[in-house]
Image 1: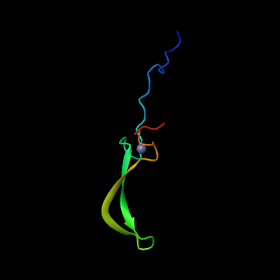
Image 2 (image 1 turned 120 degrees about the vertical axis):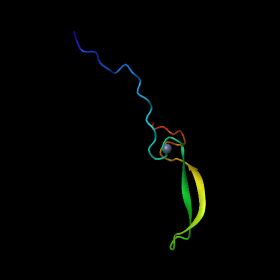
Image 3 (image 1 turned 90 degrees about the vertical axis):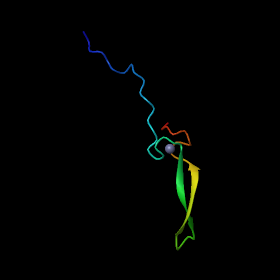
Length: 57
Ligand SMILES: [Zn+2]
């Protein structure tokens, strides 16, 4: 008999590594293009790698 293929199972959707499946990332706000002084503000932005879904397409 032929060996069963194990492809029946649906693979779990891979988590987006860029945002760890959260769909959003935090960025440190940087002021000034030369000095790159960081403020203590964090802005939450939608993850561009998965467009906020948290999953890799
Ligand atoms: Zn992501």
